[in-house]
Image 1 (cartoon, rainbow, N blue to C red):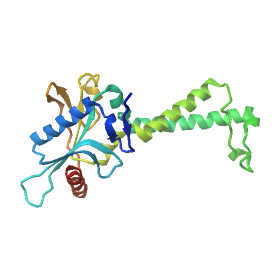
Image 2 (cartoon, rainbow, N blue to C red; image 1 turned 90 degrees about the vertical axis):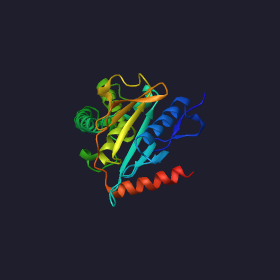
Image 3 (cartoon, rainbow, N blue to C red; image 1 turned 60 degrees about the vertical axis):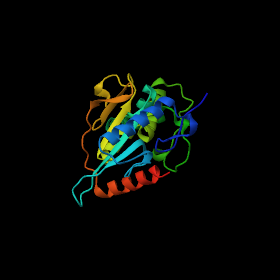
Image 4 (tube, rainbow, N blue to C red; image 1 turned 90 degrees about the horizontal axis):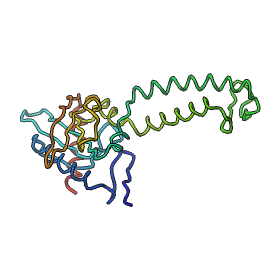
Length: 230
């Protein structure tokens, strides 16, 4: 079975990329050219963030001395691929803080009743650490599992929200296969969306213009040029 591997920024590598994903990238690049982007490339790392996007574009403006618009397109050919990047950073952080406090209280309670679980790493009991990994306690196990899930989500699953927060490009669009989204309410805040309709893309929602800095636009354009020249 062919697999898709990803680097830290989410770029797909090697022959594992699906034909459907490649087609979305091709259509996305063509759509950018229709929008006036004379410089386009695939798998470009965004400025101000650790992420790569599937398709990048730059559209100049006729006014001298004014930078144009940058575009970031993320292609999602499957529901699972979309869900990996669609976590909401703010909500995940709020829940993580709440669960951390609950975990602290539960640890203190268990430590009172299970002093044998102390690891003895501190001279002062109130600062010691406890190992409850062998404890058959449903509430503790559920709490630890949820905390671990949120930690992974904050590391890997908040790509869409972070790109908008960093204003890494002027406009951000999802490019999706039909039925990837379960409604327009799932389009990330600030993002536009294009859905494949045969051999073209149908606009579901326009992207919000982000306040991308000129220096970020310059870095992005340089990276587009470097990728496009390969």
